[in-house]
Image 1: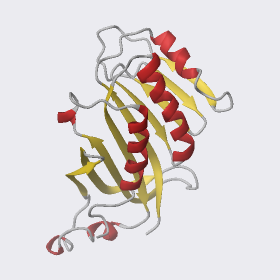
Image 2 (image 1 turned 180 degrees about the vertical axis):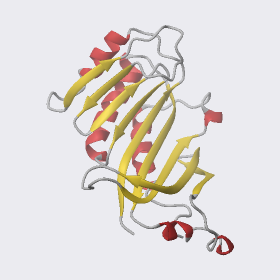
Image 3 (image 1 turned 120 degrees about the horizontal axis):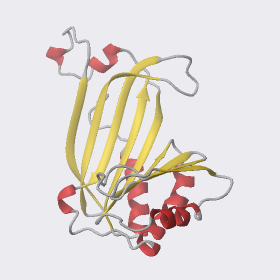
Image 4 (image 1 turned 60 degrees about the horizontal axis):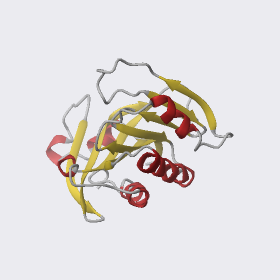
Length: 217
């Protein structure tokens, strides 16, 4: 079955909330971006007591976007790991160095759209369920995996869904599969990652998420 990557998300979690000046933070982040890649910045004014996970800053760039909350930074892109990795190294150094932010968790989510019918999805079920008249199938599994001696959640989620986007007229039915790998929440108080660690996780998580746990097995 043909499959395409529709979205990749790489998340850097902060040990403590960033309570510095977001104006200065935004300027420092923008200075890292090549002029040809920069599109626009959206600063989101929020009250001081707003939940930490709500983004305060969105930056749109050529090929990817950056979202910053008080407790995390997320990068969203399609498939150009090589180009994005250069920015991730610069952003990591900026967070850890200029902004004195400690990174204690990392996560990577890759979403695929797989062309196929409902029967292709049912083939992943136990034999006794394959003949059932299901209208929807939604399966999520999770196991642990050690990566660079760090225990990680290794998650696969797939369901029937659809895709709208480049190369598709209207809506195309198929299977949406998400692979999610992240360092354990339980170890966040003992972890602290530098930019080299973060790049290593990026490369290894990217490889690992191309391997499906049970889908199609």
